[in-house]
Length: 138
Image (cartoon, rainbow, N blue to C red; front, side, top):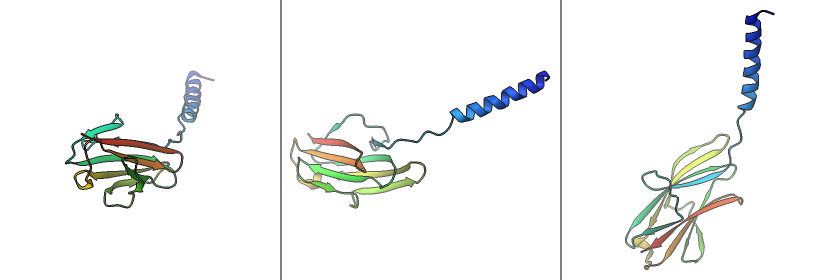
């Protein structure tokens, strides 16, 4: 074999092994909370004013059933707000892992709360994953 043939064989073999190692890995479900400036919120508890309207941008990557959006005030009953006007769909993408983006509005002024009250917002993906953020009233 001449030098060009050897180089060609090495390139073909390299591409074959390279493509095998680049196979798509299955994405895992995820939940990301962002503020209204699209910056990721890393803290679990956010202090807010008593007279305010808060907005979360929520991005969820999931397989199967779409996310459930839940709200709980001061350890009271958990309310499914998925179909309420507080949750507005921004976008959906159906692919290897489905992605849903929503805005979730919490009108604290209209809730007749007091200083120290806690509002828990939870996003649940099936039974395997959930993530929460807390508003604490100043």
